Length: 384
Image 1 (cartoon, rainbow, N blue to C red):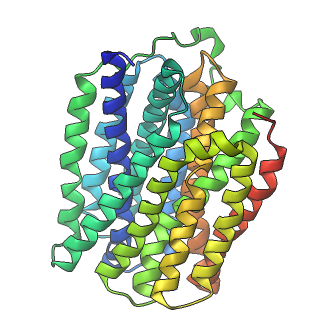
Image 2: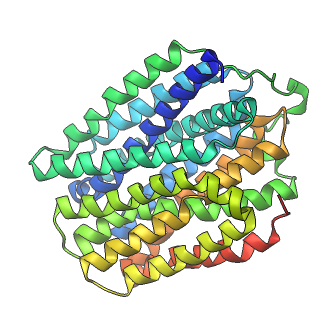
């Protein structure tokens, strides 16, 4: 790997870590954020839905621009929107303000996710190696850092608004690194004429890509539900302290990081379909364990199993998407990211609505159902 490619690798890994830091922090602070506005799970789910819709629309209409504006310009623009949204979360004082802040932060986060995954696919293809699992492991490592750090800061008495503001420091550092690095892929993007005028929405006709996108959607739906609601489940439903609740969230992110670091050799040894089948099965079993007991040690053990099980699903999907759309990586990434990230955002909304009706424990069984669905869909994928 030459020096420019190594530099792009380091910057892209750092960008994934930043996204993980935010979502790990967000998962731990969500009980404080919703409590400050006085929301039950239903209204909170409605606020998350507003953000989810904004994110899906922004990715669908603008994600393809990663190929044409250039990775660097696209990521810098997304970081500006993302940073404004993070600042807004720290200033929320009403439901309307929360909904607006979520619109901005989710739209920025979604576009940022498109950009970093497109850059990661560029690097993977130029290096000639399956590296996506390692990029997504860095996201999970960032989530671990964010969850542990925010839990410790909350336990020390720091106001949650200041913790949100602290996320701006790594965001600015990553923005500087992106600004100083040429992230252009060696392979030029598709000619402009190949991109439909309606953006990526007009390109949803590739059935093979949509099957891969469905698998990724179920994986990210489960991740989104864990990242948004696991902290609330531990702290509010089970009544655990902020430190223990943050630790439980951190265990999930840590398991995701470890699993993704180990995913590449495991996939190489056993193949795509067996790994996906095992991932779906163990996600269902792990979540079943967590929800069948109120003992904190067993609940956290279940979180560990779920994290390990989910860790390989999304990296496999993004790698397959890159194989299906050579020369149009940004567009293929937009298709996959729009659908799967939609699952990441809609999943928490679904849990919020179900929790309002049936309680959070029952609502979280959707993760077990999604795991079972991944198990079944794994047999529909073509042989690698």
